[in-house]
Image 1 (tube, rainbow, N blue to C red):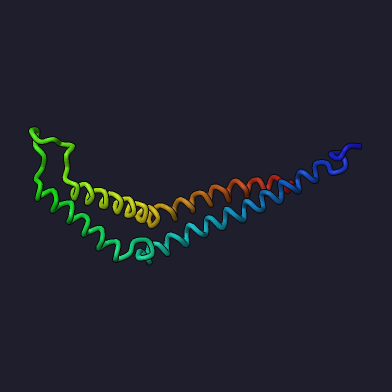
Image 2 (image 1 turned 180 degrees about the vertical axis):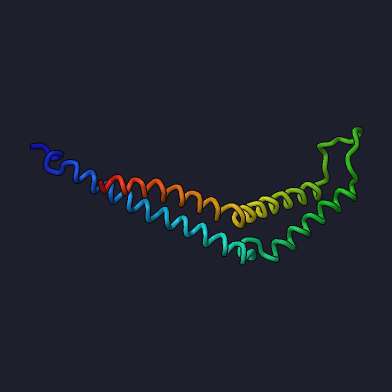
Length: 135
């Protein structure tokens, strides 16, 4: 006899049963994590974007505005690609801070619902798989 006939479908069913149970536990953990993250992020925005970062962002934004007002807006006669080094550096710093702010906003507003949706979909899929593997 070969090993499949001795273990048979019961061994495969047990493996599927355990796999689905493990997936179901992980999915429920993601679901709960997403729900908890939504509350934590909403009640503690300082965890994602500090007051120092806000001050730095405001200073960088002011520096860009000041550099634009000092140099004026380029006209058609000016060489559009020739910004001053201080303006380019200020814009680069502001762009980096904008990217950090966008990541913080996504972490606050988007991550919790994403984890919740993934957890819910996984719980449904693995739950159905678990029920099917039992029968």
